[in-house]
Length: 203
Picture 1 (cartoon, rainbow, N blue to C red):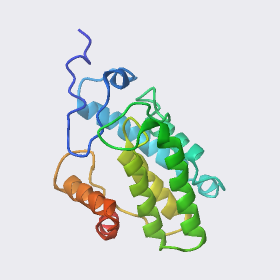
Picture 2 (spheres, rainbow, N blue to C red):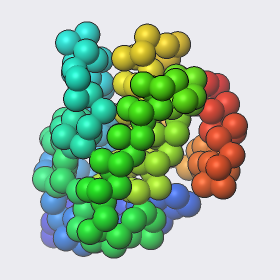
Picture 3 (tube, helix red, strand yellow):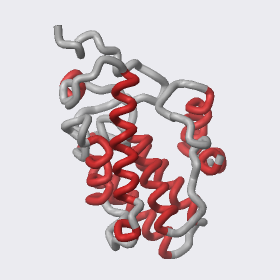
Picture 4 (cartoon, helix red, strand yellow):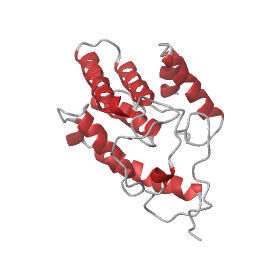
């Protein structure tokens, strides 16, 4: 038996993106538990963060762009998923329809660049608004929240702001009270109330 056949890697949780069987089959390493998957993903995300936070990377003129967003996701998950860095083509329980994703992501980054250029909002709010828009679009088969939070962190770092903490470093992938607060804040932002999400991002 393939050790993945009875591997409960993808339970249905509130706010989670459901993977198709085809997407699940593109898991690269052989894993036995969800904890192993989480650890492999965590290492990849940390490596991508180091890459993105280099002064040279933060100074890029195309930092807030579709191309860099895709490269970031690829670096986060390239050792885990074969579809890393590729926008989803399947419909999900969350997010925009597949054919609209590229346009939506480009518009989200364009909006953030304009907001920064004209100081439409304080730096943290620009970052949190971009995070929210990416989460709403849900461009990836999985890893949307983690990618969107790292993008927000990059915006703040490039603007030399105080780093966001997102619940003081708690694992937001795991179910629990902190994740529930995060999801509630995202839902408040769905109604254009960004206060709770901004507060959570700074907590």
